[in-house]
Length: 102
Image 1 (tube, rainbow, N blue to C red):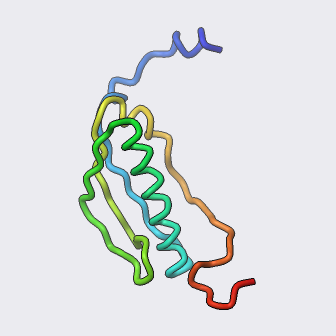
Image 2: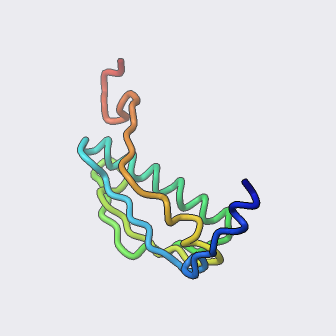
């Protein structure tokens, strides 16, 4: 398997910077809080790799988090590490915005 990886041609864009976009889906305030959690996770990952994260645009939610946040991530090998990070994510937990609990 390692030999197969070594034989694959390298993507010339792997060393480039990229833009990271996180948007809250349906779910109102809870979705914005989850989007904020995701952005913090990616930001901390970037910091651990010694990449630079620069927020270009942010639309904050009423109870924390983000309705939308766009950041430029720059450093060595950023695009190569993040190019497959896409798609929708779903969280199942007791909402932080719920006062009664379950």
